[in-house]
Length: 316
Image (cartoon, rainbow, N blue to C red; front, side, top):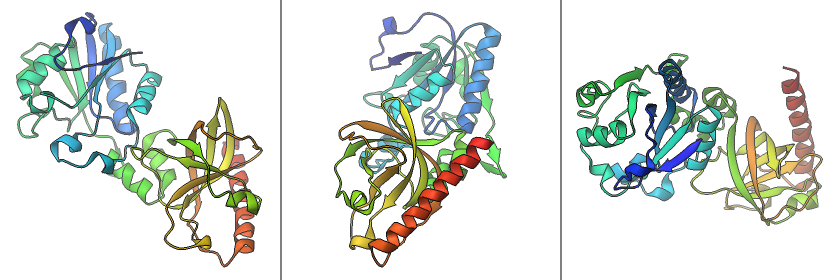
């Protein structure tokens, strides 16, 4: 997959000359609803015998249009992760448009001329609620007017689950409540975070359950506090384990939230390495224990429950 950043003013020499079917959206999470849009675009590209392209933005539009502080935005998928998922879905060209300069202030006709016609789209595919400016004047229903018969417009209906639209917002709510199983179902894949292994208090090692302490970028959304069954990818290898998102209140009050993972059959020192965590199942809520012995007993039970979970999952 070729990735092209569309800095303003657009450099036409960076744009491949071949015709494309262009999928449009912000695609945070690249969930099953987004995947339907991409698959519809892929089918159209195959029918027309041309390349499949996609265009996304480099940041959450709310940062620019609603003045939400960037530090308060926690993505389901970072830009890098989105690009990885796009490539897995067979995208030929991924365009990334930085939401800076004049782009946020473009009228719909200029945006269509530059970012649809200018990318040599023969068909544009997006969700039925996609907008490219103010909702009342830049929606999918009005796009044919701006297209002026230069490309086809395909609006994809929302994908629903249990009568509700599958959306990035609904998935965020599930993650915020710790319902990772439901979130993974709507995503269509296992939710993931990346994090740098940092030094912790080494309390887990003292308890007989050494942990990787992860510093996850503030731009990534983490799950609600709790204990989870996870898999962690380190230097090309994958290990099963159990993760704790919480404040370790057994050892004091008003502590910061940390992400600590006890891996099974793993005893390497990997400080300073970036690892990837796949979140599979919530095991339980956080509990404040009366002391270390009660905590150790619960951790032993958590480990057994995690092993049972993955054994059952592997049999499916």
